[in-house]
Length: 305
Image 1: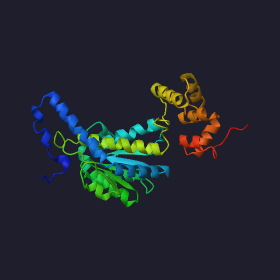
Image 2 (image 1 turned 120 degrees about the vertical axis):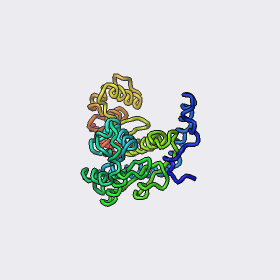
Image 3 (image 1 turned 30 degrees about the vertical axis):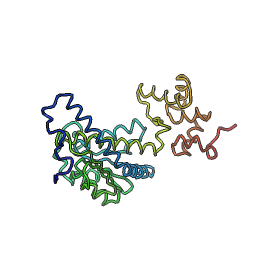
Image 4 (image 1 turned 90 degrees about the vertical axis):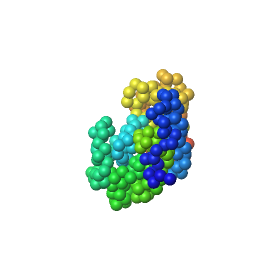
């Protein structure tokens, strides 16, 4: 039995990788990637707990930090960057921190991940408080940059979550919650940008989307709080209002224009027959949750007769 962690072990199924045909190689990757799905399925209770933890912090006015290095950090950065336009988040609510700074997003600066003090220092510069929450991401589970960041977060009383692809990880041992899906050895030994990266991105997808659902950024399965900053997103906003309220594109766009292209407001206007002012007031009472604004008629403001 190997003493190496799973992410560093050789995969018996790929010992002949350099002799495989293109189709054999593609088939092997496809079969191995299925293990990522299984690995994520095994840790769903931990993912659910993380959604609850992060949602509670954001609802209380705190911030969500995602911190990592190399592939893990870039995946966290990618996920975090998509949230602001997709869910109309205010700047500074979800903050990705990558070892090496912005330059590391497009170039290799892997040596910086060995500095635990830099991880702590990056959070210190952001003014981390106990009202915030930190998610540390490292496939190996032992990256010093992430370990230092989590240690600092705990020292100031901020809740912490670790995401790793090895069991009993070092970062997991210092976090309040450890999420450890185990996809097993890589097809290309030690290349955690592959199956481990896929696994981490799957977890991040569930986490970030789940948190946005809990924050009222979704109605049914629609991105009800998107920011229509370009023609594609404006067309999507029109479709959303049209689908929810059973309106044609012309009337849906008219409602959006009246609501200053705020999708939530336009939907509440359409479904309740109220004005912009009342629709916004209902959403305020419901803390931005469309379904609550529609369901709670007793507390909802009404248009004057």
